[in-house]
Image 1 (tube, helix red, strand yellow):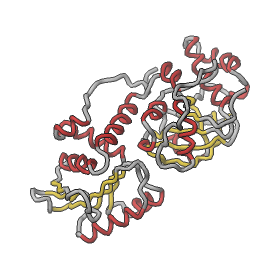
Image 2 (cartoon, helix red, strand yellow; image 1 turned 60 degrees about the vertical axis):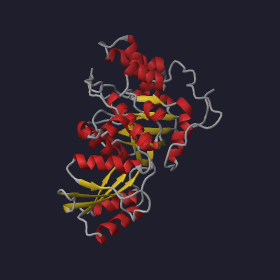
Image 3 (spheres, rainbow, N blue to C red; image 1 turned 30 degrees about the horizontal axis):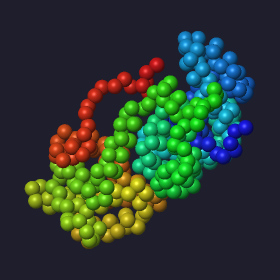
Image 4 (spheres, rainbow, N blue to C red; image 1 turned 180 degrees about the horizontal axis):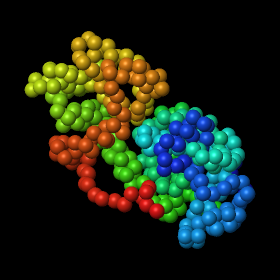
Length: 356
């Protein structure tokens, strides 16, 4: 008999990013197998294989078995109360929810037809909140994956409940994967069969390196170099009591021509609240700067994000994904010290997300 403790599942939804918001707004987790009818007629793995085989004559027996395992997991194995994680690819974030309903078929076009009801408790978790081992699991290309490595269900459950950072595995919990049954889709099986999102994995590795090498005050040096690469003249005040100023940036040789920017850098993985924005706005006004820039590697709370949206032209925010974007954009002109700490190399890869 299987454990009744909630399990954790990655359900990727659809390659069409527009359906991510549809799932959040509709309260669904879903899979995009529109060519397959109601899965409710297949109550176990053999029945799911029998349903899919005639619809996929060009696929190998192993491929049909792989798809059958994923759809069987979605329709029959995921239970009410289980944890579900949806990668929001366009945002570089993760949505966490709890399964609240059984499988049902949603007819029509313009929707994902195979759905489970979900209470999306945390739709905006930064990837920096999750440790690298579980980020690897969350990068599997398979549509439905059980995340079971390294005490994953407990750790992801803590994030679901509101923890700002991944607590890591509990002492005494085995860090190896449990032995899989025939109809279980687990992390290693999913990656072996369908591959890993190499681009996402690479970005997560870069984020991990930034966390390792540019923690605390060191991050402001990285941000200053990125701003310099973008044509700004930067002054980094002595580390310590900075009065809410980590970097002063401006145009021109002296760095005092418009636009002038007051920068505050927060390296922690936890989200930043609106009080930090208020403080930065006050410092910008006090120094008569044109703009403020808050670098928040853990992102913002919902209240803080709403405040930024309300005064978009006054204070800008870079989250971890924005820092990586700008690092990659200017990498070749950054100082050797930065490139030594984050050694990158360009390469060409097959886009597995589009490969048939």
